[in-house]
Image (tube, rainbow, N blue to C red; front, side, top):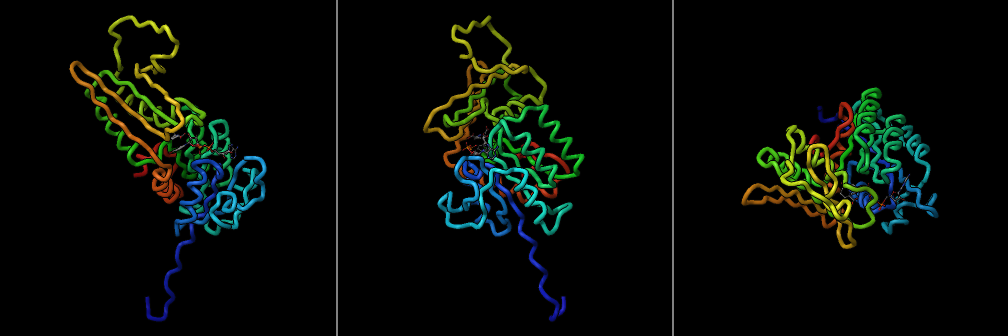
Length: 288
Ligand SMILES: NC(=O)c1ccc[n+]([C@@H]2O[C@H](COP(=O)([O-])OP(=O)(O)OC[C@H]3O[C@@H](n4cnc5c(N)ncnc54)[C@H](O)[C@@H]3O)[C@@H](O)[C@H]2O)c1
Ligand SMILES: O=C(O)C1=N[C@H](C(=O)O)CCC1
């Protein structure tokens, strides 16, 4: 660079659309995106009646953000993808989705169709749906991410659980959440079980013939033998315990999310990386 050459242009901020903008997670994401200097909020989608066209910042009590709420998913994505200056590898808009298990598959598929990179926090996708979405990502040659839990601490718990599973044949998982949660078990708990099952070994060989006098009280049984238990109570946010047992000892791993701000570093990290991914990534551990 010579004395007279202009300084290099700052990279354009990442255009971000948030779906589920008025929800518990969506509202937190809007705050995080607005506070991030390298991101620009370009769309806010929510189907809560009575908010169409309202400024999302005003609706959330954050002050005016000059982004109008819309219930029109496709229209908002179409607009976001058209407004992007630099599409292709490393460019393009990003959709952050925290909505509902009933719509998340269509949202993720729709994002690929509009050339918008999905960052999916919504849980409840089935394994066959994940496989379909991975195929859409490959076909579109686009990066996307499905992350059941954006807390770094939870990823550490999952890795510890997968490591401990080598040494214990008996384990049960309990996830505890607020009682406004739609899906059970949690996406995090399913992912934790999947990671433990990568060893391919069976868990919890039965010692006696068990009989439940109250249906479901032994939890959900996976093919591997792992049992998953779901607790729902007001006052809880998001918590998980993995308990291992062997003769004469137990070993318990526990993670507690006590405020949803804990998810935001993971959300922003994923937003920053998703546009340069080669396909669909499942889990934050693949991005850390
Ligand atoms: N990945 C993670 O780290 C993480 C963390 C917390 C929650 N979650 C998941 O995120 C999802 C949302 O959780 P929440 O607590 O924010 O829920 P919430 O009910 O508070 O918010 C969901 C919002 O989505 C909106 N919505 C529903 N259907 C919609 C649609 N078709 N289009 C646009 N908006 C729609 C609702 O009106 C609501 O405002 C759940 O699946 C939950 O399990 C994931
Ligand atoms: O609050 C929720 O709902 C959460 N859902 C995710 C899950 O199902 O794993 C992550 C934790 C919080």
